[in-house]
Length: 417
Image 1 (tube, rainbow, N blue to C red):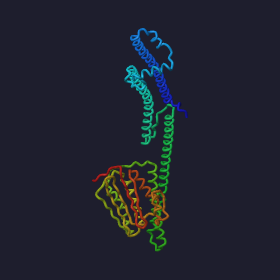
Image 2 (image 1 turned 60 degrees about the horizontal axis):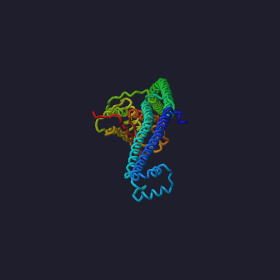
Image 3 (image 1 turned 90 degrees about the horizontal axis):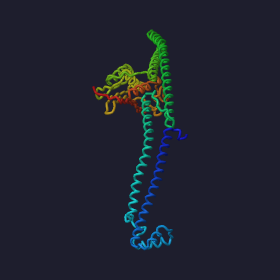
Image 4 (image 1 turned 180 degrees about the horizontal axis):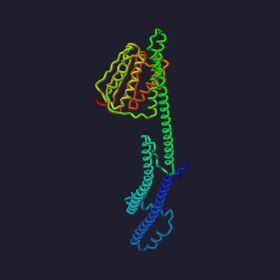
């Protein structure tokens, strides 16, 4: 690509060439003026010398005139050099000891300094004006790109000129337009997916409700057949699992579609956690599992209560499902200088090292897990909700010793109530 395609660069090069041309012309003018002044100084020097000789030797006027007007031979130069060097008048004589030569040097030195300053200022001014234009343009590009990164996806870089920067702006505009179209299309796809899942879930609710009702009717019938009773219980469990899976899929689809707006306000995390534990009390008693909630005081946090309840419920449910009878689950709610942490720890089967980096993937099922009842999206749902609140979840686990999930809430400052 030719650099001269850029009009501003072409204009800058022309201006710089003009400055250099004028500088060259000015140098030639200075050189000519110096030559004229040097000739004047030489004539004055010769006038002084001839006048001195004529006054001393009037009878030698013709010889003195000839000395300044006739050609000189190398022999004359050597003879004159030998004569004057006896008086200390030689090439090594310091400049300031020859007044006329010293004045000539000072005058030319001052003129050279002034010219150098003026020429340097002209060049620097030309370069500065060119760089300033490009810097301002790049600065504006940076502001526009920051706007795009902040979500103002319709922002475009305004540059209709030619050159590399303009081509860069055009490429960024094309990329932004492509991203906007992609985001819009992706959002439409997600909304479509959410609508499909909503319709499917509604369509499934009716047969699920009917099957649940039929199952309850059959369970209420007095029967001594243990096989039928056992299969009815299994059927009831699978129906509940399907109901939970459909509900979680719908929630996850709505979160993925980006159509959820969190209704944030200040809520007591202790009350939210108490509500979570309360919903599992019957199951914990039935499975002979114990729990304890520890808090260093009542803490409030700005969050969406229902979605935070959903996230913590999924984490607590994970602990319940992966522990055996007699196990213990501990919940610790604490506030640090930087964030609030909610830790859910159990002494269950733990997570295999091969699974630790995959547990938050949707529908991920471990080949090492003995529990086959999970849906595979509970942890994914919890992670998505916590990240929407500006936090994150960390996990530590040791096989056969237990697992610790920690919710780190940051960004929104919590306060004690």
